[in-house]
Amino acid sequence: MGNLSVIGGKAKGFKLRSVPGNGTRPIMSMVKAALFNIVSPYVLDSSWLDLFAGTGSVGIESLSRGAAMARFVENHRQAVKTIHANLEHTGFAEWGEVWHKNVFSVLSELADRQFDFVYIAPPQFKDIWSRALLALDQNPSWLLGNSWIIVQIDKVEYKPQPLDNLELFRRESYGSTELVFYMVKDGVI
Image 1 (tube, rainbow, N blue to C red):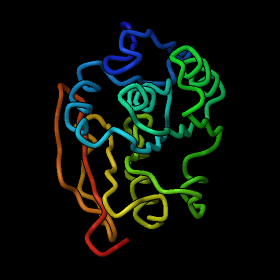
Image 2: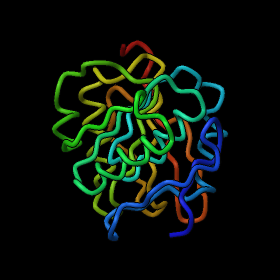
Image 3: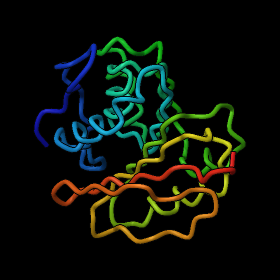
Image 4: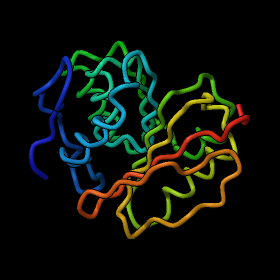
């Protein structure tokens, strides 16, 4: 899958470990660069919830660029070990929380804190992204009034979602990958 590394900020150039096997799909450097070009004005001192975190690449990139903290939620044991190793290697272990839990169990709970950014990049072609988005929509306790929810999917997966508390505000395609941006509707929080 090519070299996986931090592409900006304090840890720029640090190589990240991949999760053994074929169960995870790390974000491509081009897509990660585009994502962080879009969110860069808002990253400093922000908080990130990285769901289906895989290698931890997105949350670690946010920390490298000045985010205050990132929480990584991942159910796969090898991925959890990889996230811990990548946080240690980049020097961000102090600012990263790794939860070895099922994303849907976490999203069904009352939040212990709110996040500026929620990144959702689940396994493709299983409609998991929409289930996670709908779970957040039904339990917005994880969100602030100005939170962004960013979904990474294959562009053929996209379909409009019946949302009560969130709304689509941007879609960007990079090859077969699409980033879909949602925010909290005015007055919800």
